[in-house]
Length: 80
Image (tube, rainbow, N blue to C red; front, top):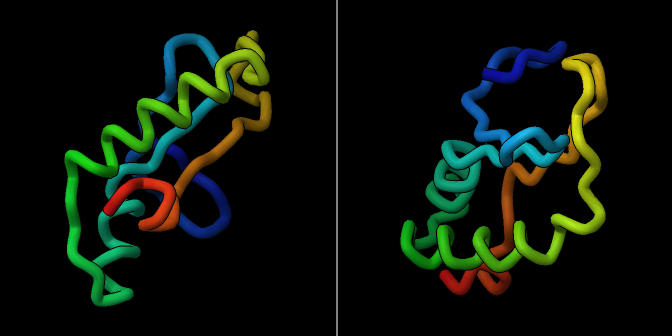
C-alpha cells in the first residue's frame, strides 16, 4: 500500500527499486473512460515498459525515497 495526501492505494514495487505500479488504478481509469479492459494487454504492456525502465530505476535504500510511479498507461501503450 502506498499512502499520500490523497489516500491509500494498492501498489506493486518492483524488487528493491523505486518503481511502483498501480494495477487497480490502471483498470479503474479505463473503466471510468468507458474503455474495454484487457488485463492481459495491460500486463504485457507493463512487462515491456518495466524492462525498458529498469536501467533508469535506482535501488530504494530507504522508504522515504520518492518512487517512480506508473498509475495509468494509455490504451495505445498497453495494447488495450
